[in-house]
Image 1 (cartoon, rainbow, N blue to C red):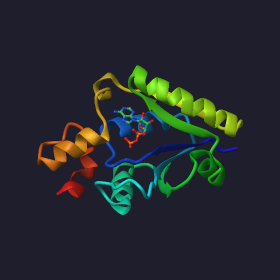
Image 2: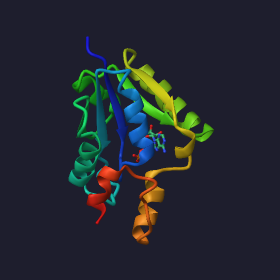
Image 3: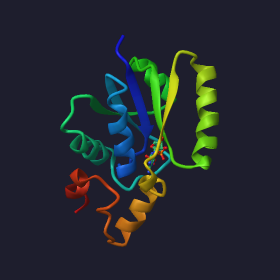
Image 4: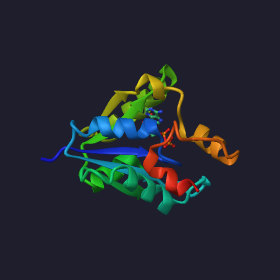
Length: 155
Ligand code: ADP
């Protein structure tokens, strides 16, 4: 059976932190599906299509990454796409506590799906999409924080 991992998030926009976790996961899985969770109550900075296009541009060099959107429970999406793994990144102890409860509950809901955690690279610990959005709002320079392939989408 193919090893398929789902990497869920809102990716508004994808950052170097997200991209690094995905790249580092490639040797571990046959396929990584970047899954953009759609929450109709949440307003986003970039629309869904742009977020999908940005992620596809970052991983245009590999056939192992695909991008899809989903709504509802992540484990239900995993079942739909035959994924046995949920991939998550850990930045801080706060991330760990948050992820621990979601991971443990997901395990109770769906025994055969494992959550796999990769520790962030130290240089990405402070990075998140919300900081990038703040910098963009005030026309700051985000080049250190996002993959170069998404820069054309920011103009
Ligand atoms: P969003 O895309 O809305 O920021 P999350 O914060 O849930 O969504 O991020 C999706 C996944 O990416 C989570 O597993 C999160 O830990 C991971 N992640 C986010 N930022 C980083 C980062 N800077 N380094 C490593 N992993 C990260």
